[in-house]
Amino acid sequence: MSKLVILVSGGGSNLQSILDAVATGKIQAQVAAVIADRDCYGLERARKAGVPAYLIDRKLHRSDLSEEIAKLIPFDCDLIVLAGFLSILNVKFIQKWPNKIINIHPSLLPKHGGAGMWGLKVHQSALDAGDNESGCTVHYVSEEIDGGAIIAQHAVAIAADDSAESLQQKVLHFEHQLLVAVIAKLLA
Ligand code: GRF
Image (cartoon, rainbow, N blue to C red; front, top):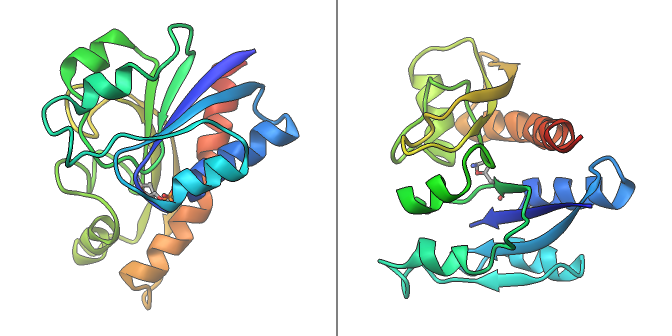
C-alpha cells in the first residue's frame, strides 16, 4: 500500500478531499501522517479520520523546521503533498525526496505565484491583472517557490463580478478534484 504524508497550515479542505478519496478507494494509499507548521483545523480533520497528526510549530522551530518535519516522514513514503502548507522547506529536505513532493497552488502558474503569493492575494493578483481566467496548478516542489515542473492544471473563467473571495471559492472547488486526480495517477 502506497504511503502519503500531507503537510498543512490551514483549514485543510484539500486534505479532506484526499482523506475522503482514500476512504472510498479513489486513491489507493494510506495517509501515514498529517503534519502542520501551526495549529490549524487541518490537524482536527486528521484526528477525526484517525490519522496521526503532528504540530511542528514554525515559531518554535525557525531554523530547524524542515529537519523536525523530516523526522516524521516514513523512509518508505511514496508521496509528500503540500496541501495549503505555507512554510518553505529547505533545499536539503527537497533534495531528500526528489520528484516525491507536490504542491497545489490556486492559480495557473507561472502566473500569480512565487514568494508571498498565497490565499486571497493570489486571486486579487489575477483580478488586478485583468485576466479572464485563473485556475489551479499541481506541481513538483523545487528550490524555486512555485517554480517546480507543472503536473496538471485546471482553468476557471473569471466573471466580471468576481471578487477575490468568490474566485477563491470557485478555484478551491476544482483544486480538490485536481489534487485527488493527480495523486491517484502518480500512485497508480
Ligand atoms: C488552497 O487554496 C491551496 O491552493 C493553497 O492554500 C489553500 C489551502 O486551502 N495552497 P485548504 O487548507 O486546503 O482548505
